[in-house]
Figure (cartoon, rainbow, N blue to C red):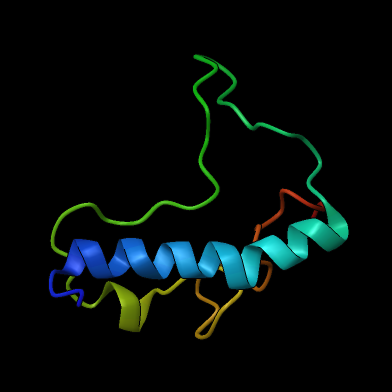
Length: 83
């Protein structure tokens, strides 16, 4: 059983990657295999979540492509296609 906020968010992130993001990427693909920052060439993750106390993160912000759509309607944001 998941009883801490970081563990719950990690489990929900994994579920989101498998059930929401993966089908979209499989169907449409992404424009690039890896996204990096322009100045330091650091790899940019698909989605970022809080590492510490999540508070109301799940209820108010959620994941991309899922209700309440505060992070966009596309699960992979605009990695698959432009605005």
